[in-house]
Amino acid sequence: MIDAHTHLIPQHLPQLKELPPEMRLIANAQTPEEAGLLLSKREPRLFVSVGLHPWQADRFSVEEFQPYYARAAAVGEIGMDSVWCEVPLKRQEEVFCRQLELAEQLQKPVILHTKGCEKRILPRLSCFSGRKLIHWYSSTDYLEDYLALDCYFSVGPDLSDEAVRRVACSAPIHRLLLETDGIDAIAWATGKQIAFREVPAFLESQAARVAELRGISKEVLEAQMEENLCTFLGIPPLEGGCSE
Ligand SMILES: [Zn+2]
Image 1 (tube, rainbow, N blue to C red):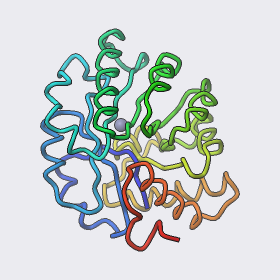
Image 2 (image 1 turned 120 degrees about the horizontal axis):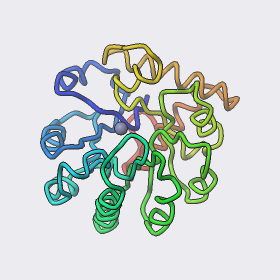
Image 3 (image 1 turned 90 degrees about the vertical axis):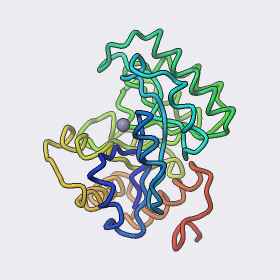
Image 4 (image 1 turned 180 degrees about the horizontal axis):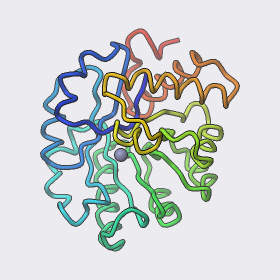
């Protein structure tokens, strides 16, 4: 069971060990403090992505994250946002491009936030040679362009949204992942606040819905997503999974 993009709060950290042993999550650290905290956790279920989020591009500098990029499993979420963010796009673009360059140098995969800037991000991303995951893609445009760039996609928690369903149906099976974006995002998307311990059940129900949309079994989808997480992060197959 995979949550390819989530946000944790400190209270969730002790609960990680209560999650099913086969669960894996990529938790996003978007302040230097959070990066220090999450990267200090020794928890086999947890992978950490570190990046200066476009929403906070005028609150921190890329330099403040420098000590953490090399230790992260991925650089992200990074990108641009013209819908939910008032940071000038020029500043966002500068921060995004700088982090893309760093990811290239460090040979790290990247996790992208593209809201409203799908078109503007494309040419930047096409110059990036590493693996890229588009998180919660929700535009009805440009999906074909991202597919052509061989991106991974983590399907957002809002499967009632047509654009999200389109990603769930169109991403190649070997590039498909699921995400929650954290329990507050689940509440935003579904109108239902769940507890952190209920995340596995939420992901199970999402997997069942996506499997149904694609006409495959949930078991096949889940095994494939474990493999996809490993290839995206460039790690060996998970114990007990990924190996068939
Ligand atoms: Zn996020």
